[in-house]
Length: 109
Image 1 (cartoon, rainbow, N blue to C red):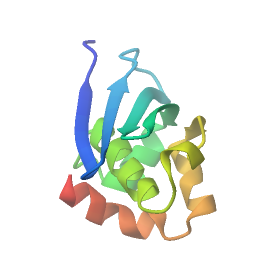
Image 2: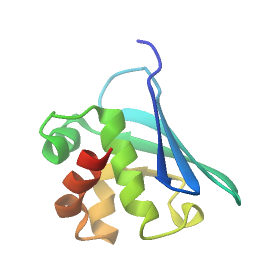
Image 3: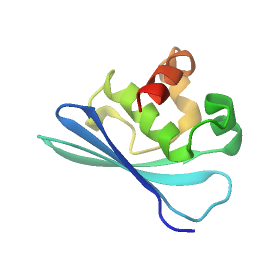
Image 4: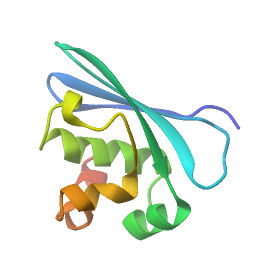
């Protein structure tokens, strides 16, 4: 499978680049790079098919789901405060409003 990439602006000073490992399987593995005027951070993110379907209903790509999750996170913490490696399913443990808020970030994408 070819490597997929999604790049969007989190805000005027940050960019988010999401790359799939291309390996398929469950969970899917993504590398997310967040860049701003102060530098760059890299994150390894996993996303199970069950979490993906629960969060998006299959209406968006997995890359769009991860990118929207990062836009959500970056409105709440700096790129350096985001864990270097995590499963998307843990975000709601830190931010209980994540699952309710995510659809707004998906639509904005």
